[in-house]
Image 1 (cartoon, helix red, strand yellow):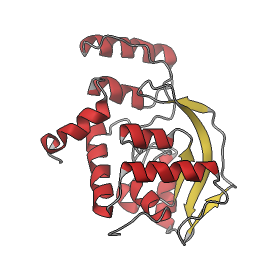
Image 2 (tube, one colour):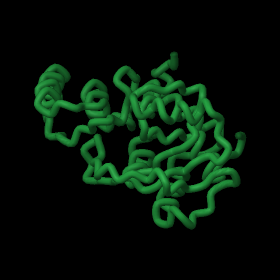
Image 3 (tube, helix red, strand yellow):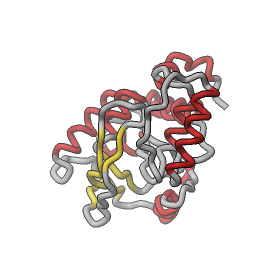
Length: 209
């Protein structure tokens, strides 16, 4: 368990003025729009949140059903700090990759996989920013273990075993914004998890790894 008091500024920047309970609700998967709207209204009222204008809930979710947003973000922060990298460096490289995904020079052992590129539509930023993005491409580790590939498959169903790592990262047009402005790489139990350790390796940004 992380001591959140030691990361109070990071958490404050993460929330951006939105109550934690409201933000976590936005990030979780939602499949029933009417029920989601009712629950969101009740939650906003309980949190004394002045507005509930957000409506673009994701069916797959940005965060697992039982994941703690603050624990997730603090864990990712430690990974980035250990590697000697920054959120800005990762976001900038994501922008460069998205501009030319099939000619971007990845680190040795990584490639772009066109075969499983899926267009699942466009999603807006769950913080309410006027930013949208769809699926771009998949970065794959060429020699992935069976277990990390199996972990990728589990993520489609909302499960994950974080210690196994991931064999791939599905890059979306929204991802650079989430990393740069919200310090967020999505939940470990989601298909769209952009493992910062994976990206740091793939983009040659590591110092200590």
